[in-house]
Amino acid sequence: MVAKVNKFLTSDFRHNKSNEADLIPETPVKARRHSWRQQIFLRVATPQKGCDPSGWHEASENDLLNKRLKLDYEEMTPCLKEVLSIWDKMLTTPGRSKIKLDMENIHSAVEKGVPRQQRGEIWKFLVELHQLKHPFPNKQQPKDMPYKELLKQLTSQQHAILIDLGRTFPTHPYFSSQLGAGQLSLYNILKAYSLLDQEVGYCQGLSFVAGVLLLHMSEEEAFKMLKFLMFELGLRKQYRPDMTILQIQMYQLSRLLHDYHKDLYDHFEANEISPSLYAAPWFLTLFASQFPLGFVARVFDLMFLQGPEVLFKVALSLLGSHKPLILQHENLETIVDFIKSILPNLGLVQMEKTINQVFEMDISKQLQAYEVEYHVLQDELIDSSLNDNQRMDKLEKANSNLRKQNFDLLEELQVANGKIQNLEAMVEVLLNSEGKLNQTIRALELERKALLENLKEFHMQPANSSGKTLPSEQRCTNTAN
Image (cartoon, rainbow, N blue to C red; front, side, top):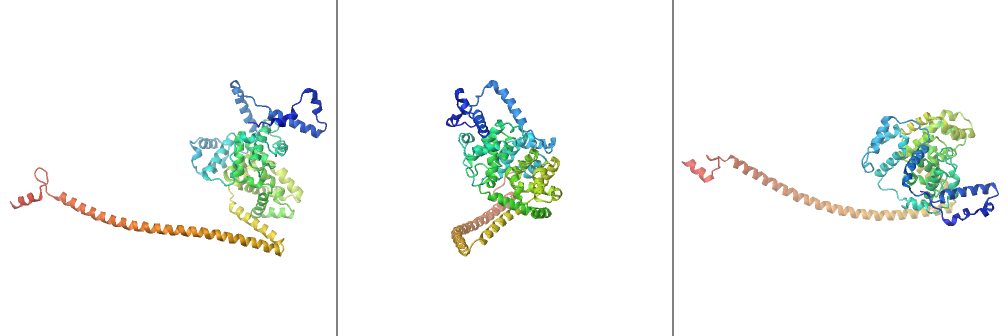
C-alpha cells in the first residue's frame, strides 16, 4: 500500500492551464526538482484503484511478472533436486513456527543452497527458528505500530531517502524505473522505518538492505524483516548517528585480519590502509552496494542463520581468498581500487568458495575479546589526554560508582542470604518429613511381612472332602478319633 499525501502538501501540483506556464521552473535544478515532485504526486498522492473482481486475473499475472522481475539475478549455484526436496519438506512441516528443529540439519541445508524462488519464504522460516530459540527479545524493541499507520505520517528524512532511491540497484529492472513500483515500495519501507526508529531515522546503506529484502517478498513483509534485522539481530547499532559501533567493527576486523592473514595485515599497514577505507560499505549495506546479487543473497542467507558475525567471516574470507592478487598491488590507490572495483567481479565460482569457507569459521570469542580490547584502549587514550585534576575527578566518579555498585551488591547479598535461610529451614522440614515417612514405610513393611506369613499358613491348611477348609477345632477332633 502506498502512503497518502496530505492535501495541503500537494497544493503546488494543482494548477490549471492558464497558469501552467508560470509554474515551469527555469533552472535545470528547479526543473529536476519540479519533475520529481510531479511524479511523487502522480504516483503517491493519486488514490489507488479499488479491487475489481474482473481484474483479479490481470492482477495475478502482474504479480507473477513482478516476481519474475524481482528475481532477475544470477544465482551462484543452482540448487539440486535433493536440496529443493529438503526445503519443501521443512517449509511444509505442520506447525513449523512452534517446532524446534535440529539446527545442524538447517545449517546443512543452507550450506547446500537456498532456491531463489523460495528464498523469501526460507528467510521467514529462519526468523521463526531464531524467535523459537530466543523467545524473549532484547529490551530495545520498537513500539508495535502497524505499517499502514506509519505510511500515513510524514518523515523529516524524505529528502535523503529520495536521493538514495536512484542510487540503489540502478541497473536492476525492478528499481531502474524512476519512481516506478520498485522505487515507490522501497521509499515506503524506508520512510516507515525512519518513523519507527527515531534514533537511527534513515542512514545511507539501509536502502540496499531493504532493497534486497524487497526483491524476495512483499513490501510489508520486507518491512517486518528489516525490523527483525535491525532490532532482534542488533544491526541498528551500526547505523546510529555517532557510528561508534561501526568503529568497533572496523577495529575487530583489523585484529582478525592480523590473526588470520598476517602478511595481508602488514601489507595494509605499510600502505596505511585501514578497514574503514574498504569495509565500511560492506558492513553498512551487507555487501549489497558492490557485489553481485547472487553473492549478496547468500550473505543474507547466512545472516538470517548465524547473525551479524557473518559480516566479519565474509570479509575475512574474501580478503584471504584473494590475498595473492591484493599483495601484487603496491600502493594505497591501487589496493583500494582493486578491493572496491575488481574484487566484486571475480566470478561466482570464486564467490561460492568464499561462502563455503564461512561455514568453517568460528570467531565469536575473538569478537567479544576485541570489543573489550577496543574499549580498554579508548579509556587509556582518554586518560593520557587528561591533566591531574581531570584524572582525579574521573577517579572520584569511578569510586562513587563502585561504592554504589557495592551497596547494590550488598543489598542483593542480604536478599540472597534471606532466601538461603528460608531454603535451609525448608530443607530441615523436608528432612523431618522424610524421617517420619521412613518410619511409616518400615511399619508398613513389617505389617506386609506379617500378612504374607498369615496368608502362607492359610494356604498350607488341609482341605475337607468337599474341598472346603475345616475349622481348627474339627481338625483336632478328627485327629483324636
